[in-house]
Image (cartoon, rainbow, N blue to C red; front, top):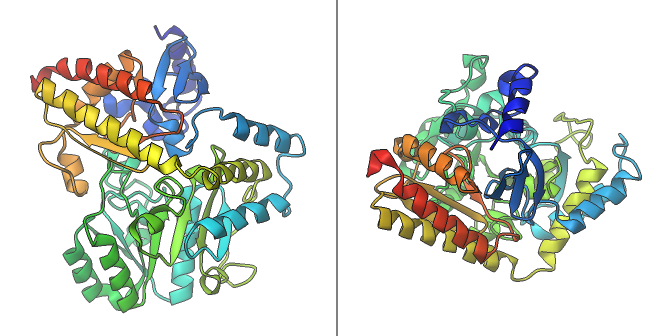
Length: 431
Protein backbone atom coordinates (compact mmCIF):
# COMPACT_ATOMS: atom_id res chain seq x y z
CA UNK A 1 0.00 0.00 0.00
CA UNK A 2 1.33 3.44 -0.95
CA UNK A 3 -1.71 5.71 -1.24
CA UNK A 4 -0.25 8.60 0.77
CA UNK A 5 3.17 8.36 -0.89
CA UNK A 6 1.58 8.55 -4.33
CA UNK A 7 -0.49 11.57 -3.30
CA UNK A 8 2.56 13.34 -1.88
CA UNK A 9 4.59 12.54 -4.99
CA UNK A 10 1.95 14.15 -7.18
CA UNK A 11 2.03 17.27 -5.04
CA UNK A 12 5.83 17.30 -4.96
CA UNK A 13 6.09 17.09 -8.75
CA UNK A 14 4.00 20.23 -9.03
CA UNK A 15 6.35 22.06 -6.66
CA UNK A 16 9.87 20.69 -7.17
CA UNK A 17 11.74 19.47 -10.30
CA UNK A 18 10.96 15.79 -10.56
CA UNK A 19 9.34 15.98 -7.16
CA UNK A 20 12.62 15.53 -5.31
CA UNK A 21 15.47 17.54 -3.85
CA UNK A 22 18.20 15.26 -5.27
CA UNK A 23 17.96 13.22 -8.50
CA UNK A 24 18.70 9.69 -7.28
CA UNK A 25 15.74 9.91 -4.88
CA UNK A 26 13.37 9.84 -7.85
CA UNK A 27 13.78 6.04 -8.28
CA UNK A 28 13.66 6.61 -12.07
CA UNK A 29 16.65 4.33 -12.67
CA UNK A 30 14.89 1.38 -11.04
CA UNK A 31 11.52 1.88 -12.71
CA UNK A 32 9.71 2.83 -9.55
CA UNK A 33 8.39 5.78 -7.58
CA UNK A 34 9.87 6.93 -4.27
CA UNK A 35 8.13 6.30 -0.97
CA UNK A 36 7.82 9.17 1.48
CA UNK A 37 9.36 8.58 4.90
CA UNK A 38 7.52 9.28 8.13
CA UNK A 39 10.30 8.28 10.52
CA UNK A 40 13.43 6.20 10.97
CA UNK A 41 14.51 4.02 13.87
CA UNK A 42 17.91 2.33 13.89
CA UNK A 43 18.18 0.10 10.82
CA UNK A 44 14.54 0.69 9.86
CA UNK A 45 12.51 3.21 7.88
CA UNK A 46 8.74 3.66 8.12
CA UNK A 47 6.84 5.35 5.30
CA UNK A 48 3.72 7.48 5.45
CA UNK A 49 1.56 4.46 4.51
CA UNK A 50 2.79 2.39 7.44
CA UNK A 51 5.22 0.18 5.50
CA UNK A 52 8.46 -0.87 7.20
CA UNK A 53 11.84 -1.33 5.47
CA UNK A 54 15.28 -2.52 6.48
CA UNK A 55 17.35 0.41 5.26
CA UNK A 56 20.72 -0.05 3.55
CA UNK A 57 20.89 3.57 2.34
CA UNK A 58 21.16 5.15 5.80
CA UNK A 59 20.95 8.70 4.43
CA UNK A 60 23.59 7.76 1.84
CA UNK A 61 26.11 6.78 4.51
CA UNK A 62 25.69 9.67 6.92
CA UNK A 63 24.19 7.45 9.64
CA UNK A 64 26.87 5.20 11.09
CA UNK A 65 24.73 4.59 14.19
CA UNK A 66 21.36 4.25 12.48
CA UNK A 67 18.33 6.50 12.40
CA UNK A 68 17.39 8.67 15.39
CA UNK A 69 20.32 7.53 17.53
CA UNK A 70 19.31 8.73 21.02
CA UNK A 71 22.67 10.26 21.95
CA UNK A 72 22.92 12.21 18.68
CA UNK A 73 19.29 13.34 18.85
CA UNK A 74 19.85 14.57 22.41
CA UNK A 75 22.96 16.51 21.38
CA UNK A 76 21.05 18.12 18.50
CA UNK A 77 18.09 19.08 20.68
CA UNK A 78 20.21 20.53 23.47
CA UNK A 79 22.33 22.55 21.06
CA UNK A 80 19.38 23.80 18.97
CA UNK A 81 17.74 25.08 22.13
CA UNK A 82 20.69 27.47 22.55
CA UNK A 83 20.56 28.69 18.93
CA UNK A 84 20.70 27.11 15.49
CA UNK A 85 23.16 29.42 13.73
CA UNK A 86 25.32 32.29 14.92
CA UNK A 87 27.40 33.58 11.99
CA UNK A 88 30.38 33.75 14.35
CA UNK A 89 32.67 31.05 15.79
CA UNK A 90 31.50 28.67 18.49
CA UNK A 91 33.41 26.39 20.83
CA UNK A 92 31.80 23.38 19.14
CA UNK A 93 33.83 24.02 15.98
CA UNK A 94 37.03 23.88 18.00
CA UNK A 95 35.95 20.65 19.69
CA UNK A 96 35.06 18.88 16.44
CA UNK A 97 38.23 20.13 14.74
CA UNK A 98 40.24 18.74 17.64
CA UNK A 99 38.58 15.32 17.17
CA UNK A 100 39.30 15.35 13.43
CA UNK A 101 42.90 16.31 14.16
CA UNK A 102 43.24 13.38 16.57
CA UNK A 103 41.59 10.78 14.34
CA UNK A 104 42.49 11.64 10.73
CA UNK A 105 46.13 11.22 9.64
CA UNK A 106 47.72 14.50 8.57
CA UNK A 107 44.77 16.68 9.64
CA UNK A 108 46.71 19.56 11.19
CA UNK A 109 44.15 22.09 9.98
CA UNK A 110 40.42 21.67 9.25
CA UNK A 111 38.03 23.91 7.28
CA UNK A 112 34.36 23.10 7.88
CA UNK A 113 31.80 23.46 5.09
CA UNK A 114 28.24 22.22 4.65
CA UNK A 115 28.50 19.59 1.90
CA UNK A 116 30.90 17.25 0.16
CA UNK A 117 30.55 19.30 -3.02
CA UNK A 118 31.80 22.38 -1.15
CA UNK A 119 34.70 20.39 0.30
CA UNK A 120 35.76 19.19 -3.16
CA UNK A 121 35.36 22.64 -4.68
CA UNK A 122 37.52 24.17 -1.96
CA UNK A 123 40.17 21.48 -2.16
CA UNK A 124 40.50 21.99 -5.91
CA UNK A 125 40.90 25.73 -5.39
CA UNK A 126 43.51 25.19 -2.66
CA UNK A 127 45.43 22.74 -4.84
CA UNK A 128 45.55 25.17 -7.73
CA UNK A 129 46.38 28.10 -5.49
CA UNK A 130 49.16 26.27 -3.66
CA UNK A 131 50.80 24.72 -6.73
CA UNK A 132 50.14 27.43 -9.31
CA UNK A 133 49.05 24.67 -11.70
CA UNK A 134 45.69 24.36 -13.51
CA UNK A 135 45.03 20.68 -14.24
CA UNK A 136 43.27 17.95 -12.23
CA UNK A 137 43.40 14.21 -12.69
CA UNK A 138 40.30 12.26 -11.66
CA UNK A 139 38.92 8.78 -12.28
CA UNK A 140 35.96 7.68 -14.34
CA UNK A 141 33.04 6.79 -12.08
CA UNK A 142 34.35 8.64 -9.05
CA UNK A 143 31.93 11.32 -7.89
CA UNK A 144 33.12 14.42 -6.06
CA UNK A 145 29.95 16.47 -5.93
CA UNK A 146 28.31 18.54 -8.64
CA UNK A 147 31.19 20.96 -9.20
CA UNK A 148 31.33 21.71 -12.96
CA UNK A 149 34.96 20.72 -13.38
CA UNK A 150 34.43 17.35 -11.70
CA UNK A 151 31.29 16.12 -13.45
CA UNK A 152 33.31 14.62 -16.30
CA UNK A 153 32.53 10.88 -16.32
CA UNK A 154 31.26 11.11 -12.76
CA UNK A 155 29.44 8.33 -10.96
CA UNK A 156 26.50 8.52 -8.55
CA UNK A 157 23.46 10.37 -9.88
CA UNK A 158 25.20 11.40 -13.11
CA UNK A 159 25.76 7.75 -13.96
CA UNK A 160 22.33 6.77 -12.67
CA UNK A 161 20.59 9.16 -15.03
CA UNK A 162 22.92 8.43 -17.96
CA UNK A 163 24.10 12.04 -18.18
CA UNK A 164 27.60 12.19 -19.76
CA UNK A 165 28.44 15.34 -17.84
CA UNK A 166 25.66 17.87 -17.63
CA UNK A 167 24.08 20.52 -19.82
CA UNK A 168 25.17 23.85 -18.45
CA UNK A 169 28.77 22.73 -17.98
CA UNK A 170 30.87 24.53 -20.57
CA UNK A 171 33.87 22.96 -22.32
CA UNK A 172 36.08 25.55 -20.68
CA UNK A 173 35.22 24.41 -17.17
CA UNK A 174 36.30 20.83 -17.87
CA UNK A 175 39.24 21.61 -20.18
CA UNK A 176 41.70 21.17 -17.30
CA UNK A 177 40.13 17.91 -16.06
CA UNK A 178 41.91 14.71 -17.11
CA UNK A 179 39.91 11.49 -16.65
CA UNK A 180 41.47 8.02 -16.53
CA UNK A 181 40.10 4.59 -15.54
CA UNK A 182 40.02 3.71 -11.85
CA UNK A 183 42.51 0.98 -10.88
CA UNK A 184 44.64 1.61 -13.99
CA UNK A 185 48.13 2.63 -12.85
CA UNK A 186 49.46 2.57 -16.41
CA UNK A 187 46.85 5.11 -17.53
CA UNK A 188 47.80 7.33 -14.58
CA UNK A 189 51.46 7.12 -15.53
CA UNK A 190 50.67 8.00 -19.15
CA UNK A 191 48.55 10.99 -18.12
CA UNK A 192 51.27 12.27 -15.82
CA UNK A 193 53.88 11.81 -18.50
CA UNK A 194 51.85 14.13 -20.72
CA UNK A 195 50.46 16.61 -18.18
CA UNK A 196 52.56 16.23 -15.03
CA UNK A 197 54.12 19.70 -15.10
CA UNK A 198 50.64 21.27 -15.16
CA UNK A 199 48.99 18.91 -12.69
CA UNK A 200 47.75 20.48 -9.46
CA UNK A 201 46.17 17.39 -7.95
CA UNK A 202 45.19 13.75 -8.29
CA UNK A 203 41.67 13.44 -6.87
CA UNK A 204 40.32 9.98 -6.02
CA UNK A 205 37.79 8.10 -3.97
CA UNK A 206 40.21 5.67 -2.30
CA UNK A 207 37.38 3.14 -2.32
CA UNK A 208 35.04 3.91 -5.19
CA UNK A 209 31.50 3.97 -3.82
CA UNK A 210 29.69 6.00 -6.47
CA UNK A 211 29.88 3.45 -9.28
CA UNK A 212 28.64 0.74 -6.97
CA UNK A 213 31.29 -0.52 -4.56
CA UNK A 214 34.64 -1.01 -6.33
CA UNK A 215 37.71 -1.73 -4.22
CA UNK A 216 41.18 -0.42 -5.09
CA UNK A 217 43.49 -2.96 -6.67
CA UNK A 218 46.53 -4.05 -4.70
CA UNK A 219 49.10 -1.26 -4.83
CA UNK A 220 46.87 1.19 -6.73
CA UNK A 221 46.62 3.83 -4.01
CA UNK A 222 50.33 3.50 -3.22
CA UNK A 223 51.10 4.13 -6.90
CA UNK A 224 49.04 7.34 -6.80
CA UNK A 225 51.02 8.51 -3.80
CA UNK A 226 54.26 7.87 -5.67
CA UNK A 227 53.08 9.53 -8.89
CA UNK A 228 51.83 12.64 -7.08
CA UNK A 229 55.04 13.06 -5.13
CA UNK A 230 57.23 12.64 -8.21
CA UNK A 231 55.36 15.19 -10.35
CA UNK A 232 54.74 17.70 -7.57
CA UNK A 233 50.95 17.35 -7.52
CA UNK A 234 48.81 16.99 -4.43
CA UNK A 235 47.07 13.71 -3.66
CA UNK A 236 43.49 14.37 -2.55
CA UNK A 237 41.50 11.54 -0.99
CA UNK A 238 37.76 12.11 -1.24
CA UNK A 239 36.71 10.39 1.98
CA UNK A 240 33.26 11.91 2.16
CA UNK A 241 32.02 8.29 2.16
CA UNK A 242 34.99 6.34 3.53
CA UNK A 243 35.92 8.79 6.26
CA UNK A 244 35.11 7.29 9.70
CA UNK A 245 33.41 4.37 7.90
CA UNK A 246 36.38 2.14 7.06
CA UNK A 247 38.33 3.00 10.22
CA UNK A 248 38.60 5.86 12.68
CA UNK A 249 41.25 7.33 10.37
CA UNK A 250 39.41 6.39 7.19
CA UNK A 251 41.04 4.95 4.09
CA UNK A 252 44.40 6.51 4.96
CA UNK A 253 44.51 4.33 8.06
CA UNK A 254 42.95 1.29 6.40
CA UNK A 255 45.41 1.21 3.47
CA UNK A 256 48.43 2.91 5.03
CA UNK A 257 48.61 5.61 2.34
CA UNK A 258 48.94 9.28 3.26
CA UNK A 259 47.02 11.90 1.29
CA UNK A 260 47.93 15.58 1.14
CA UNK A 261 44.31 16.66 1.55
CA UNK A 262 41.34 14.61 2.74
CA UNK A 263 37.68 15.45 2.14
CA UNK A 264 35.24 14.49 4.88
CA UNK A 265 31.46 14.49 5.17
CA UNK A 266 28.48 12.25 5.94
CA UNK A 267 29.56 10.54 9.21
CA UNK A 268 31.39 13.74 10.17
CA UNK A 269 28.03 15.49 10.70
CA UNK A 270 26.31 12.62 12.48
CA UNK A 271 23.36 12.92 10.09
CA UNK A 272 23.41 16.72 9.93
CA UNK A 273 24.80 18.78 7.00
CA UNK A 274 28.54 19.05 7.65
CA UNK A 275 31.69 18.40 5.64
CA UNK A 276 35.32 19.46 5.75
CA UNK A 277 38.68 19.42 4.09
CA UNK A 278 41.69 18.67 6.23
CA UNK A 279 45.45 18.55 5.76
CA UNK A 280 48.80 19.95 6.83
CA UNK A 281 49.00 23.47 8.21
CA UNK A 282 51.26 24.87 5.50
CA UNK A 283 48.78 23.78 2.84
CA UNK A 284 45.41 24.56 4.46
CA UNK A 285 46.58 27.98 5.58
CA UNK A 286 46.48 29.08 1.96
CA UNK A 287 42.77 29.51 2.78
CA UNK A 288 41.48 32.95 3.73
CA UNK A 289 41.84 34.62 6.14
CA UNK A 290 45.22 32.98 6.80
CA UNK A 291 46.01 33.04 3.08
CA UNK A 292 44.64 34.40 -0.18
CA UNK A 293 42.60 31.42 -1.47
CA UNK A 294 39.04 32.50 -0.82
CA UNK A 295 36.25 30.34 0.57
CA UNK A 296 33.27 31.19 2.76
CA UNK A 297 29.94 29.76 3.89
CA UNK A 298 27.07 31.17 5.93
CA UNK A 299 26.29 27.86 7.64
CA UNK A 300 29.83 26.45 7.73
CA UNK A 301 30.57 25.15 11.22
CA UNK A 302 26.88 25.20 12.09
CA UNK A 303 26.62 24.55 15.84
CA UNK A 304 23.85 21.93 15.59
CA UNK A 305 25.82 19.95 12.98
CA UNK A 306 29.01 20.32 15.02
CA UNK A 307 27.26 18.91 18.11
CA UNK A 308 25.98 15.91 16.15
CA UNK A 309 29.46 15.32 14.72
CA UNK A 310 31.13 15.57 18.11
CA UNK A 311 28.77 12.95 19.47
CA UNK A 312 29.29 10.60 16.51
CA UNK A 313 33.09 10.85 16.52
CA UNK A 314 33.17 10.54 20.28
CA UNK A 315 31.22 7.29 20.00
CA UNK A 316 33.77 5.99 17.49
CA UNK A 317 36.67 6.78 19.81
CA UNK A 318 35.14 4.88 22.71
CA UNK A 319 34.02 1.74 20.83
CA UNK A 320 37.06 -0.42 20.00
CA UNK A 321 35.03 -3.18 18.30
CA UNK A 322 32.87 -0.93 16.11
CA UNK A 323 34.69 -1.53 12.83
CA UNK A 324 35.07 -5.25 13.44
CA UNK A 325 31.29 -5.49 13.87
CA UNK A 326 30.58 -3.42 10.77
CA UNK A 327 33.00 -5.51 8.73
CA UNK A 328 31.52 -8.78 9.98
CA UNK A 329 27.98 -7.68 9.18
CA UNK A 330 28.95 -6.40 5.74
CA UNK A 331 30.65 -9.66 4.89
CA UNK A 332 27.70 -11.65 6.23
CA UNK A 333 25.41 -9.72 3.92
CA UNK A 334 27.70 -10.10 0.89
CA UNK A 335 28.12 -13.85 1.47
CA UNK A 336 24.37 -14.25 1.91
CA UNK A 337 23.65 -12.47 -1.36
CA UNK A 338 26.19 -14.60 -3.18
CA UNK A 339 24.70 -17.80 -1.78
CA UNK A 340 21.19 -16.69 -2.71
CA UNK A 341 22.33 -15.83 -6.24
CA UNK A 342 24.06 -19.21 -6.62
CA UNK A 343 20.88 -20.98 -5.54
CA UNK A 344 18.87 -18.98 -8.08
CA UNK A 345 21.54 -19.49 -10.76
CA UNK A 346 21.88 -15.73 -11.21
CA UNK A 347 25.30 -14.22 -12.04
CA UNK A 348 26.20 -11.84 -9.22
CA UNK A 349 29.36 -10.52 -7.59
CA UNK A 350 29.43 -9.01 -4.11
CA UNK A 351 31.97 -7.53 -1.74
CA UNK A 352 32.19 -5.65 1.56
CA UNK A 353 34.73 -3.44 3.29
CA UNK A 354 34.29 -1.74 6.64
CA UNK A 355 30.79 -0.28 6.78
CA UNK A 356 30.29 -0.62 3.01
CA UNK A 357 28.84 -3.44 0.93
CA UNK A 358 27.97 -3.77 -2.72
CA UNK A 359 26.97 -6.09 -5.52
CA UNK A 360 26.64 -6.18 -9.29
CA UNK A 361 24.68 -8.42 -11.62
CA UNK A 362 27.81 -9.44 -13.50
CA UNK A 363 29.73 -12.58 -14.36
CA UNK A 364 33.04 -11.37 -12.95
CA UNK A 365 34.26 -8.83 -10.38
CA UNK A 366 33.92 -5.18 -11.38
CA UNK A 367 37.14 -3.16 -11.15
CA UNK A 368 36.27 0.12 -12.88
CA UNK A 369 33.50 2.30 -14.24
CA UNK A 370 33.25 0.51 -17.59
CA UNK A 371 32.68 -2.74 -15.74
CA UNK A 372 30.00 -1.12 -13.59
CA UNK A 373 28.22 0.25 -16.66
CA UNK A 374 28.40 -3.18 -18.30
CA UNK A 375 26.64 -4.83 -15.36
CA UNK A 376 22.96 -5.71 -15.78
CA UNK A 377 20.96 -2.60 -14.93
CA UNK A 378 17.60 -4.15 -15.79
CA UNK A 379 18.25 -7.02 -13.40
CA UNK A 380 19.21 -4.56 -10.65
CA UNK A 381 16.02 -2.56 -11.21
CA UNK A 382 13.84 -5.67 -11.05
CA UNK A 383 15.69 -6.91 -7.96
CA UNK A 384 15.32 -3.51 -6.28
CA UNK A 385 11.56 -3.57 -6.81
CA UNK A 386 11.29 -7.12 -5.52
CA UNK A 387 13.28 -6.31 -2.41
CA UNK A 388 11.25 -3.17 -1.73
CA UNK A 389 8.05 -5.21 -1.94
CA UNK A 390 9.58 -7.55 0.66
CA UNK A 391 10.53 -4.75 3.04
CA UNK A 392 14.18 -4.12 2.13
CA UNK A 393 15.31 -0.71 0.90
CA UNK A 394 18.42 -0.89 -1.30
CA UNK A 395 20.02 2.08 -3.08
CA UNK A 396 17.72 3.04 -5.97
CA UNK A 397 20.69 2.83 -8.36
CA UNK A 398 23.23 0.13 -9.19
CA UNK A 399 25.90 2.87 -9.05
CA UNK A 400 25.69 3.31 -5.28
CA UNK A 401 27.11 1.34 -2.35
CA UNK A 402 25.09 -0.22 0.45
CA UNK A 403 25.68 1.29 3.88
CA UNK A 404 25.84 -0.70 7.10
CA UNK A 405 25.17 0.85 10.49
CA UNK A 406 25.75 -0.39 14.01
CA UNK A 407 21.96 -0.76 14.21
CA UNK A 408 21.91 -3.55 11.61
CA UNK A 409 21.73 -6.93 13.32
CA UNK A 410 22.21 -10.51 12.18
CA UNK A 411 18.42 -10.79 12.20
CA UNK A 412 18.13 -7.88 9.77
CA UNK A 413 20.74 -9.46 7.52
CA UNK A 414 19.10 -12.90 7.65
CA UNK A 415 15.76 -11.34 6.68
CA UNK A 416 17.46 -9.47 3.84
CA UNK A 417 19.07 -12.63 2.49
CA UNK A 418 15.76 -14.51 2.68
CA UNK A 419 14.07 -11.69 0.75
CA UNK A 420 16.93 -11.75 -1.76
CA UNK A 421 16.42 -15.45 -2.40
CA UNK A 422 12.79 -14.86 -3.33
CA UNK A 423 13.53 -11.73 -5.36
CA UNK A 424 16.35 -13.39 -7.28
CA UNK A 425 14.21 -16.42 -8.05
CA UNK A 426 11.58 -14.08 -9.51
CA UNK A 427 13.95 -12.34 -11.96
CA UNK A 428 12.32 -13.27 -15.29
CA UNK A 429 15.07 -12.25 -17.70
CA UNK A 430 17.82 -14.26 -16.01
CA UNK A 431 16.03 -17.55 -15.39
